Amino acid sequence: SRKSSGVFMLDYGAGNVRSLVNAVNRMGYDISVISTPQDFAKAEKIIFPGVGAFGSGMASLRAKGLEQPLREYLASGRPFMGICIGMQSLFASSEENPGVSGLGLIDFPITRFSSDAGNGAVKTVPHMGWNAAATVDGPLDYVNHDGEDSRYYFVHSFAAIVPKSSESVSKEQQHLLPGGWTCTLTTYQNETFISSVKRGNVFATQFHPEKSGSAGLKLLASFLEVNPANFTQPTPPTTFPLIKSVPDHLSRRIIACLDVRTNDAGDLVVTKGDQYDVRETTGSKNVRNLGKPVTLSATYFQQGADEITFLNITSFKGSVLADDAMLEVVSRASECVFVPLTVGGGIRDLVDATTGKITATALEVAAEYFRSGADKVSIGSDAVYAAEAFYKNGNRGDGSSSIEQISKVYGAQAVVISVDPKRVYVKSVEEANGHAVVRVGDKDIGPNGETLAWYQCTVKGGREARDVDVKQLVVACEALGAGEILCNCMDKDGTNSGFDHALLKLVKDNVRIPVIASSGAGKVEHFTEVFQATNVEAALAAGIFHRNEVKISDVKDELRKNGFESRRMDV
Ligand code: 1PR
Image 1 (cartoon, rainbow, N blue to C red):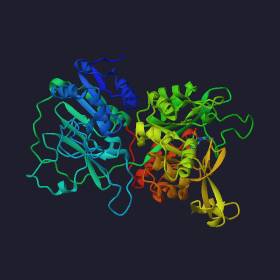
Image 2 (cartoon, protein in one colour; image 1 turned 30 degrees about the horizontal axis):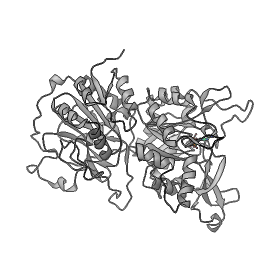
Image 3 (cartoon, rainbow, N blue to C red; image 1 turned 120 degrees about the vertical axis):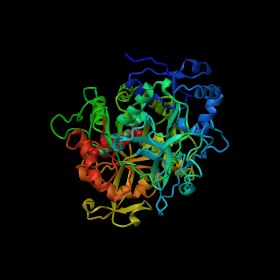
Image 4 (cartoon, rainbow, N blue to C red; image 1 turned 135 degrees about the horizontal axis):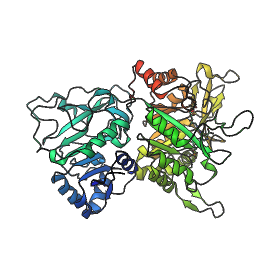
């Protein structure tokens, strides 16, 4: 039985708010939706999980007549919590949509992260992953300050970035934030930004508490339990918030991947292939069964996985929308997994085999997954076709691809491209016909002693190879609006022989969006090696976790031992 305590969510209908509902429910509270001006009267607490872009968010608020009642609510002293765009809406404006005004409570610029890391290197934008929120002017209610467990999940390209000039402003001259606001600061490489703000009844975070594991749930709980009677009139801080250097704690993400398909008995199971072959090699030749999808995802969340990915590996055979079982898996998993959840498999336009008509667009398919609780969708086969069309069209999209459709509505950060490349060994660069060639690792020499290879993209779970190489694919997908690359390797999958560093470097060198290393993890050292050898932001593994050979916490301990930032398991 949940408490119904007047908790409301301000939803202008832009995207996936399911994660927030699940997190609030998990804390024992019901949450209702504000969609008309009249609803504000009933609200005792409001959470505003702004989704999408600053401009479209403000426009939707205004179109629905919600701006004025929101201003009155904020002034009434009742508790408010903004998340992401919900925080940015409190500011005056954003570089994301010049000319659009925000609520204007905070006079501070919102600008885009620079793609220049300052040392000649390229910086990945968005800032995606787990980072710390450091206090600068005394404790900020709700946010945990006990060091290690104050890691929260961020995903954003714009932020209230502290201008370099403020760092030299003297104590007497100005407060970081005018108007009596307190804040926390977070650093992403060469830039420091405001990661949460509070004044009286108004609190807001740039990060996503609903996706921040137990630290985020704890923060949400303290907001849900707060007694408005205890709010005091805001008094401007008397001390200047020192803009001392806040260390960058952005952590390398460790992702547990569950390949899911229907087994021979008709049940949806977690399976695992060996170079994409998921059937037992002896005896029954049945589809390998490594457990139940929802149960395993909950276990990995408990063990400290930074993200969970489900890949529906045979969805190309049928229609996802008819596949209620997978939607049900996502929906149940999202009730017990409070870190980002990615779902892939079958994200494409669905076409009626006899009439050739589109029965559901890729956007509608993705929407179904988002409604079920996915935070990101991953596109495999369809991304290869989109890249082919992109080059045919003169290195341009025409707006019709699944990548363009979905990223336009849900944002680039919600669109992951799952690449399934396979090595093609060549004796010389010429032999590759213009495809990007790499020198393979010492252990990956070809059958005839080849030291060079290019990576050919495949579709339909590796069953069909196309004339697109991995570099062409990722470049096209980034241009079309993808937000992240999940880079598998068919030669490495299930081999436990380590990640393919040559492939990952090639991919990383050609995009500015985050890259996830996948395929081949066999022991904890492989994770350290991939982060030492390449600049990938995350590493994913399946087999070693399913077979209990390595615990997620072991991977993280090993990373920390080697000097890498890594989110501690704090459940
Ligand atoms: O093409 O959009 O319908 O998506 C299908 C998705 O299913 C793709 O993302 C594709 O990667 C995936 N997939 C299809 N067939 C298989 C298979 O194994 N037969 N799985 C498959 C891909 C690769 C990784 C695996 C890592 C780590 N599996 O997801 O988890 O290689 O494994 P390891 O740590 O055990 O080495 P679409």
